[in-house]
Amino acid sequence: MAKTNKWATMSRLHSAARLSRTALAARLLAHGFYAGQDQIMLALSNDDGQTPGQLAARLGVRPPTITKTINRLQAQGFLEKKASDQDARQAHISLTELGRETIKSIERSVRKTEKQALRGLDKKEQKTLAKLLSRIEANLTNGDLAELDDDLDGEE
Image: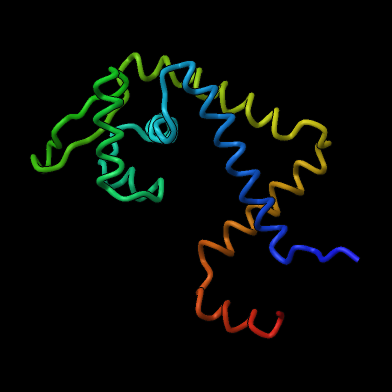
C-alpha cells in the first residue's frame, strides 16, 4: 500500500501559489511589470498618496524592499514621489497619468490568471475555495504559533 504524503496539502497549496505567481508574472511582464510591482500599483489605485511605510505595511513587506520597487516604478514613469505638506521628511507616492492608464492592464492580467486558475470549477466550488483560502489566511495571519504548535502536537 502506498504511503500518503503527510504534507500533501501544504505542498499543493505552495505549488498552486507558485504557479499562479509565475502565470501572472508572465502576463505582467508583457506590460513591463516585474513581480511585486503590480501589488504596489493596485494598492495605490485603491488609495493613492500613501507613504512607503504605509505601502510596506499594507503589502506585508519590509520598507527597504518597497523603496527599491517604488524607485523602479518611478523610473518607468508609473509613480511620482511628493514631499508631505505636514512633514518634509515623509514622501507620498502617487500614480502618474501613465500609472493610472496602466491599472486596467494589470487588472486584466489578474482576471485572466484567475480565470485560468479556476478553469473547470463551478461557481459554488469557486466560492467554497475562496472561503477556505480566507480561513487559511486568517489562521496563518492571526494565529499564535506557540499556542497552535501545542494544540497540534497531539495530532501527529
